[in-house]
Image (cartoon, rainbow, N blue to C red; front, side, top):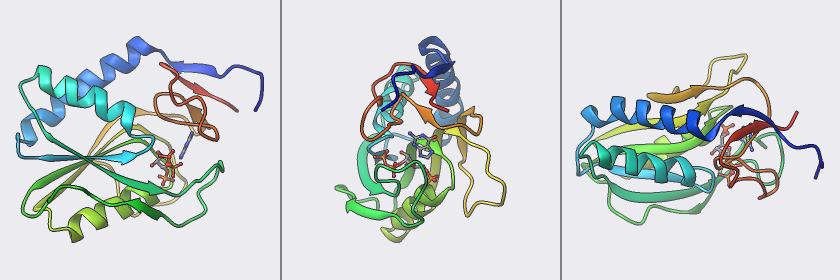
Length: 175
Ligand SMILES: O=P(O)(O)OC[C@H]1O[C@H](OP(=O)(O)OP(=O)(O)O)[C@H](O)[C@@H]1O
Ligand SMILES: Nc1nc2[nH]cnc2c(=O)[nH]1
C-alpha cells in the first residue's frame, strides 16, 4: 500500500452535516416498519450514522444487512456481484431502504434492489453516501445521495483499499 496519505475530500464535520441533511429528506418517506438494508461491508459506517440521524428525528427503522461483494480487493468492479450473506429478517410487504457507502458502476445497488424486491418488499428505496460520475447510463439511480463525489478512488467512511482505511473518519482520494 502507498505511504502517501489520502487527499482529504470531505472532513468528518462535513460528513456529519451531509448525513443529517439526507436523513431529513429520508425521514418523511419511511416509517418505523421500514427495513434498512445495509450493504456489507462498506455500508456499515453510513448506515450506523444514518440510523442515529433518523433516530434524532424520531424515526426508528428495523435494521438488516445484505453482504454482496463485487470488487473483492480490486479497484475495478469485476462485473458480477456475489451474495455472501442473505437478508436475516422478512421484508415481505415492507418498505425497504437499501443503504450503501458508494455508488459507482451501480452494479451492487441494482443487484441489491433486485434481491430485496424478489424477497417481497412492497417498496424499495435506496440511499448512498457518495455517488461517483459514470460515463454511461446506470441500471439504477439511488433515491437519496448525500454527496456527489468526484471520479477518483475514494477511501474512508467505509471505503477500503484491500480491507484497510475503511475506518478513516474523513473521505479521501488515493489517486
Ligand atoms: O456501484 P458499484 O460499482 O457496484 O460499486 C459500489 C460498491 O463497491 C463497494 O463494495 P465492494 O464490492 O468493494 O465490497 P465492500 O462493501 O466490502 O467494500 C461499495 O461498498 C459498494 O457496495
Ligand atoms: N474504496 C472504494 N471502493 C469503491 N467501490 C466503488 N467505487 C469505489 C471507490 O471509489 N473506492
